[in-house]
Image 1: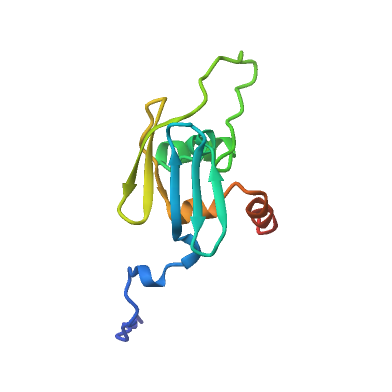
Image 2: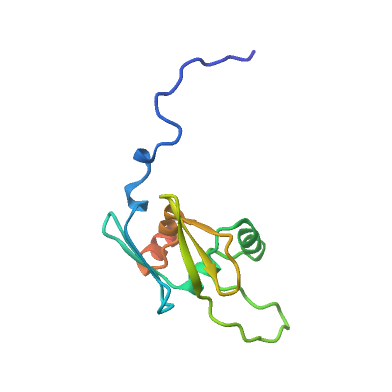
Length: 141
């Protein structure tokens, strides 16, 4: 027998007031000219630095995510060369431009032409490359 519940929750389905404050940036600096990456100070005081090569290897778009899943990499991990392949020169990843995506994310156009990834603040906080955050992720896996 199927029972239909008629009680409706009074919590809005999508309300930024319920999002974690830790994933909200206080300030964001994208260092396009120097090519050093992006620095975020979070509202909880934590500070993160993301190099452009890290951001390119962490791209959250469907294509990059699928490739990472197939190779068993985590966001930000450098792809391993195929066995027997010769190393080829590849310029270091740099962002040519960066644009806000609403109030929840940022998007980069990289020097290799890739521009599909939308990096939400939550994604960036979850994958902060600092040693403290890496250690925390390692204990939760």
